[in-house]
Image 1 (cartoon, rainbow, N blue to C red):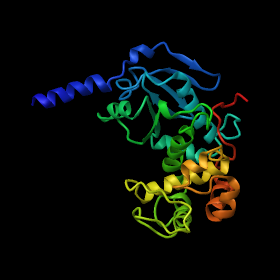
Image 2 (image 1 turned 180 degrees about the vertical axis):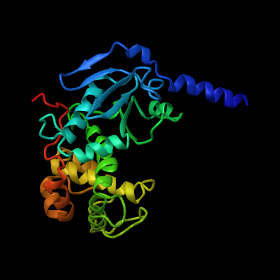
Image 3 (image 1 turned 90 degrees about the vertical axis):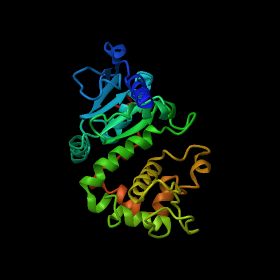
Length: 280
């Protein structure tokens, strides 16, 4: 019983972010505003301090996350959804589905802080995590900007996979799954001990099930098409998982996924987000 009491006490102090420290927060640009979380924002104010909204999709951050990085993440989200930056979402069906699913982005300083924040149910599990320590304001300097990955996961997993299930559904029979099976050298329900030598997508995390593998495959392919994976030294970092790190390599080496992700009717982004939504 004493251990249970100590655990509950730990949750109270580790999960409850001091939102009052952010009540007067106003940070951002003309197009994206970072503010403090209010008590009226049920289920979130207890654990998070900062918030913003992009086309109706929420971002919640703990107090320790830098304002600049919250703004950067929000800008990446905005640029993915409004790639021509005209102030209107390129594919409203995707935005509508994300809103319907109450999809949101959780930002914390690191994995430990994030784990503390989500130990107690916070109302909606349709979220993905992004850590302050993995956000790089300039992609490739000094590291790959994980905002480009995690935010895209949110959009494809909660948006495209559900709006276009026959094309992008995270299941065996979708078109993106067929492309992935070819990229992996065959159909593997679970991660194999080794992939065929002909495979160019060889993600080896055994905790990542088949649908998760599709999420990762879509990310690798699209960000490579957009140019995110071709900065110096990047191929050496990722080739154990993904070999086609440029647009030309994807176009020539994986024609199935290239055709899907560049088909204009789906309105995937064609320009790589840089975190400067409507500022350039």
